Image (cartoon, rainbow, N blue to C red; front, side, top):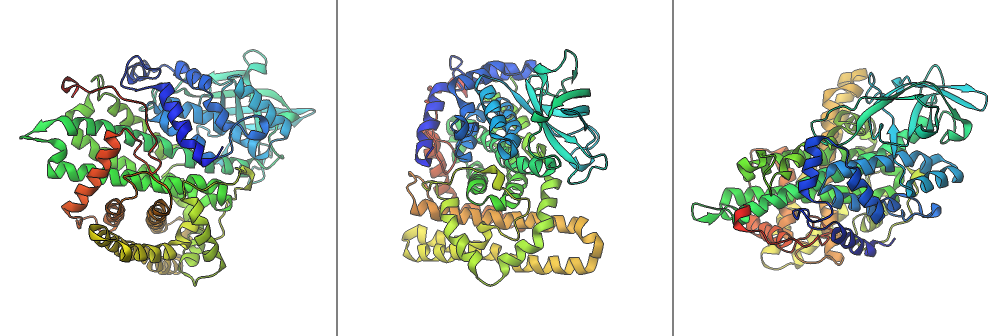
Length: 597
């Protein structure tokens, strides 16, 4: 589908699901919280969304589905997750289980799974094991070759949807010695094995996503035919890593949505609650907290926007973009959520409060984005392995790679630009030093300076200050490169596993985020976004929030900037639009009475 169709599609889904605060809507917070309290899998909500056709946007067009843009599926998940991250996660899991077939399966396998998903079948992604966690090359579940197929023996644990799924894509050892070429992926249809052959492990009770099925399976010589192998024998690791790149990019939708909902209901409180003769929103400290939380959310939105679109436009860079977004977005937004807790006060702690009870669920649920499909350490390590090449390219002389990146960022961050058809098999495991966001950042800085010179009034001042902050932060890339070189010489073999290298990877993520904010703003100026975006004040506050990660005790933003950003936030809230550069129109809300706050 075209990018221009996405706002219409989002509005249709929102209208279908209705106001989540309305108990009579199709997916109300009241019922979502009840499922969560009883830890009951949300069959009704999954079925509801399948009836609407949300799964069609995860099925390739070649197999009769509607999936051409990852961006579409990502944003539909955001709209679902703003109501219930559990339901969104359950849907994500089925999509991920299909990806190995999409990446490496035959046309027949893709069609088979597409037809099954259209008929309502659920699938799980059988990757992790109890004793090995993220160390997939230590996985023990074995696939023994026998005439006509394989015998699967072993256990998979902490698998979402494992018990409720009709089948699983299983990562299995096909070579006794293991190693990078020692694993393959198989489709295990649970309902087509002999009775009792697939032992379903007990559901694990969770801190967040309490209604999700998180369990596992145990197999003892379960036969699967040769036709069940997805991709070539020995290609399992590469396929699994490509699948993880998508998972790491999509899971950020949970964190974005949780904070969107938390900020929205916090504003419901602060706009109407009067303390000491004024609304909480107008108390200077609370006002700053709200504006800064909004800026943090919009930083995460910009980072996610580029990462999602990069899967289609620059799949060869997926290893970098997916790891940056997977580390940076949940880490940033976890802190943002904590600040919203303070503004909302005691109400955030109440589980059954009629209007604000959903906040505590969002607080718990969003944490899954920190560890699912590769935790913080895994993603920083992936960046650390590529850091020298990335920094060399970002700080080297301008060349063809930089010129190409400058052309591509217009599409990477341009919501009005069409993307090529998604081809997941083109994703690569190493980027060879390429990160278009950073490569195109110098040109973005120059463009921002030109906008500042042409601007009038406050915008001129704010854009000038934004350009200065961005230049300061991006200028640290050279020091980062030099520090990396010095550490390598100092630590020798220990360099690759050193804590210092992981800290450098964190700093690289910050540089990428700065670039993402610049590109998103510049494309918004050039594009067709609706008021109140783009906003020079918001860009300045975003960059100053990023600078605060380097200089945590400095506060430079003045009250005029805070007031202007608060005006943007207020307008999006009053007009009931998503807190995002997309600004999707949300379902119409009923009136809030004073009794409800």
